[in-house]
Length: 363
Ligand SMILES: NC(=O)c1ccc[n+]([C@@H]2O[C@H](COP(=O)([O-])OP(=O)(O)OC[C@H]3O[C@@H](n4cnc5c(N)ncnc54)[C@H](O)[C@@H]3O)[C@@H](O)[C@H]2O)c1
Image 1 (cartoon, rainbow, N blue to C red):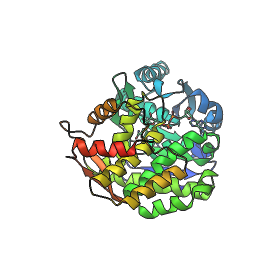
Image 2 (image 1 turned 90 degrees about the vertical axis):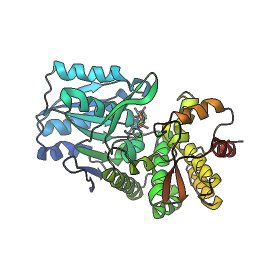
Image 3 (image 1 turned 135 degrees about the horizontal axis):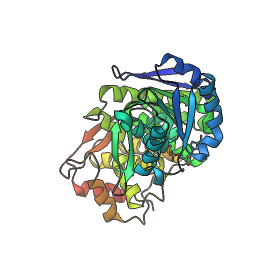
C-alpha cells in the first residue's frame, strides 16, 4: 500500500492508496479513538457496488454501522441532503466521537464532509473516494460544501478528513466518461506543478486507459502528492492554493453558461485549461508550442478542448466576473508560464480575454 501524508499540524492525515483495499479499512481504524458508532454515507449506485464489502470490513473491526443513502446526482448536493444526515445522526444518538465515512464520488464526499464539519460543531470523517476525480482531487484538501439555488459550492467549510482511503479497484465500474473527467484534473497537476509528470502522461495514454494498476497508482499518487504539497502550504487558499483552480475560471463559467447539463466538471475544466492556456499566450506568457501540447494531450484522452460555438457569450463573460477569485470585478486568472509552472494574474483587459475566448471557440 502507498501512503501520502498531508502535513497540516494537528490536522495532518494520511492518504492510503492501493488495489482491493476496501476490505482493510476497518482494521486500519483501530489506531483512531473513534467510538464504535459509524455511518457510511453513500448513494444507491455506489452502495450497491461496494457498500457490503465496506460494511463488513467495519463490522469485523467492531463498528456498529448505519447506512445513510442519498439520491445520486449533483442536484442532490444541497442542504436537504445534509438535513437527512443530521436527522439520522440525531435519531441514533451519534456523539462527538462517532465517525462518518463518505463512500462515493465528489458529490458524496463534499456533502458528508460538510455534515461532519457542522454536526455537534464538528465530528471526524473519512473519505473513501470511488471516482478518479474524487481520488485525485475532491477527497484531499478539506474543502467541503453543498450548492445553493443561487450558486454552486456556495455553502461550505474547510474541514479535513482523518483519513483518505483510495481503492483503485473501484475504477473498474466507473463509466469511461467519468474516468476521463478525472484525467482532466490529473493533466492539470502536470501543467501547474510538474512538467516531468506531464511528459509521463503524454507517454502513457494506452496503459492509463486500460487501467494498468502500476500506472494508475503512479498518477493518483503523484496527483495527491502535488495537491497535498500545495494544501500544506496554504490550507485556506489565501494565496498559493488558488493555482489548483487553473482552468476553473473559464471552466466554471462554461458550466454556468450551459446550465450544468452539457459537460461533466472535468470536461468543462479541460476546455477551461485549453482556453486559459490560449489566454496566457495572448497575454505574452507562454509559447504557442506549449499551448498546442496541452491541447494535444487533452484531445489524446478524448477530452473536449473547444468552447462550444453556440454558447451564450454574454452569459459566459458574466459568469467569469462572478468567479470566487475575482476581487472588485477584477478576475484573477491562473495562467501557465510554461508547462509545470503557473502564475496568478489579475488586470487582464476584457479585450484580451475576449480574443482568447474567440480563439478557443470550437469551429
Ligand atoms: N471538495 C473539493 O475540493 C472538490 C474538488 C473538485 C470537485 N468537487 C466536487 O466534486 C463533485 C464531482 O465529483 P465526481 O466527478 O466524483 O461526481 P459524482 O460524485 O457525481 O460521481 C459521478 C457518478 O459516478 C458514480 N460513481 C461513483 N463512483 C463510482 C464507481 N466506482 N463505479 C460506478 N459509478 C460510480 C456516481 O454515483 C455518480 O453517478 C462536484 O460536486 C464538484 O463540485 C469538489
